[in-house]
Every structure is written in C-alpha cells, then in structure tokens.
Image 1 (cartoon, one colour):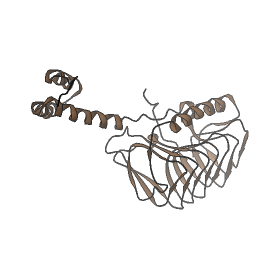
Image 2: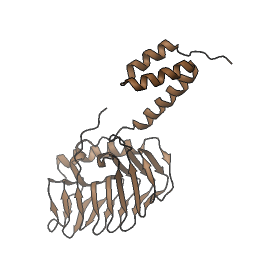
Image 3: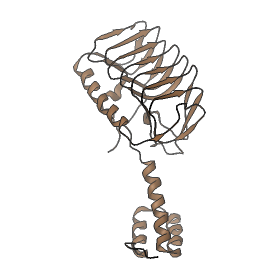
Image 4: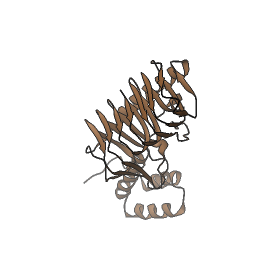
Amino acid sequence: MQFTAVPSRQQLTTWLSAVSGTVAPRRWFAAVLAAGTVAAMVVLAGFAGMSAAAAEPSVALGTANAYAVLAGSAVNNTGPSVINGDLGVHPGTAVTGFPPGLVNGAVHAADAEAAQAKSDLVIAYNDAAGRPSTAVATELGGRTLFGGVYSNSTELGLTGTVTLDAQNDPSSVWIFQAGSTLITASNSTVALTNGADPCNVFWQVGSSATLGTGTDFVGTILALTSITVQTGTTVEGRALARNGAVTLDNNVFNLPTCAPPTT
C-alpha cells in the first residue's frame, strides 16, 4: 500500500511545536511520531476533529442581547412578573400588564431601538436555523448533552430534566433546532453543569414555544411566531419572538451577562 502527500516527521514535529502549549503533549506526540508518520496523521486528524466539534461558535444577538423579552406583535403579562433586562416590541406597540409586572430595564415599543433589536433577532434566528446539526428524538428529558447543534424536524419537548454538560469548557455552545414547536412539561428543568454558560444556550423554534408551569428554563428562545411562558416559570435567558406575541404569567426573567461572541 502506498501513501502520498504525507508530511514528514520533521513537518509534523514543527506543526506540533506551533500548536502544543505544554511539554507533556509534545512528548506524547513524539512517541506517536516514532511509531510512524501515517499513525501520527491518524491521531492528529482525530484531534483536529475534536477541536472542530468543540469550536461551535455562539449565536450573535447584536442589540437584541440586551432584551430579556422581545416580541413582534405584543407583550402581554399577568401577575407580578419581574423582567431583569430590557423589554421590547416591534412592529407592534402593545405592552400590557406592567404594572403589576416590573421591568428592571428599558421598555421599547415600536421605536428605533426596538426596530434595530428586531432586525438583529432576524439575523440571529437565521444563523441558528442554518447550522448543520445532529438529529435527536423529540423528548429531551433524562438526557445529558455535550455542546453541539441538535435538531428535530417537527418538535422538541422536555419532561423532567435535560442536563447540558460543558465538560469544563465554558465556551461550549448548545443550539437546539425545533422544526415546529418547543414545549416543556410542568416543573421541567434545563440544568447546566461543568462550566456550562447560559449565554451559550439557544433554542431556535420554527413556530411557537410554550414553557409549562413551574419550568426552570435556561437559554435564549428564538421563535418565529410566539412564546408563552406559563405560571411560575423562571427563565435565565431570553424570550425573543419574531412575529407574534410573548405572553407572561407571574414569571421571573434573569438576563445573563454575555460578552459579544468572538468571530
């Protein structure tokens, strides 16, 4: 068997010196190099693949980053909801239920700021929807998922707990793509572990999202149509609806502090 266009051991050693930051990895790779150039290429290709998988970029939200709630037609609230972040609507103008709801941020209704945030939301939605993905079953409950892009062509549901494990890499990103709906059952939980960052969790929804009563939810929802957040649900993230309404009922939104993603 003949292999062509295979780098020499010296070329591999030079490359390794450029990318390796510690002595131990260099010694380990040197041992692999001693076993043969082709074997080294297989190992290096595997490491390159792992690096690519770990490097899923975040979704840039632009000015929508400041909004805990953003809707296309209206924001409707019942009860003493607390929104720790900005609230906006565009092109609609209706914002109802504040008070008794409280917004610890700015409120923008059909103004220039809301228009810009809405434009940035459209870009973010299209970005998240266009990422290559791994297909998953509808039900996410009971699963532990590492960073990546996960999709279901029809719907995503959550009953119980889904755990997002960053494997001690705080830059890990999760993007969930639901072809139609996202629905959580009552008292469901999105749990983060091993350094997972709520800034890096995104839920792109092809129609509407419904968070069931008492859900403990994490991440930014990017919905094409509407978002309904039922009684007592807490969200560490955002509810951003392109065309329809965001409906709230005695909820708490905590906007995470997120740096702009690097490009």
